Length: 104
Image: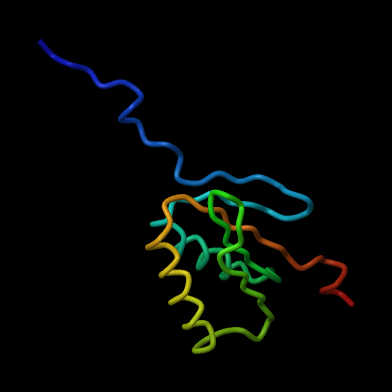
């Protein structure tokens, strides 16, 4: 007799995206947190990244400028990595630069 496992074993989506008051919010599991933050930073048009827990409490807020690159970002990676080790589910809130601001 063969047992079949139903939706309990199916994986939940690793990432959800929603728009919240002019900001993007990505829901990720802790193990994907660091890779998602790196992916967002490579896009280059981000003003601020806020990482929040399940209770919507801010764990870390990372203000970014165009000049933040290289060695200056290493402490940020360490902090995000530590948060990823401690939380199971979290959300990343992203505030992007407006196109009007970039052209002025």
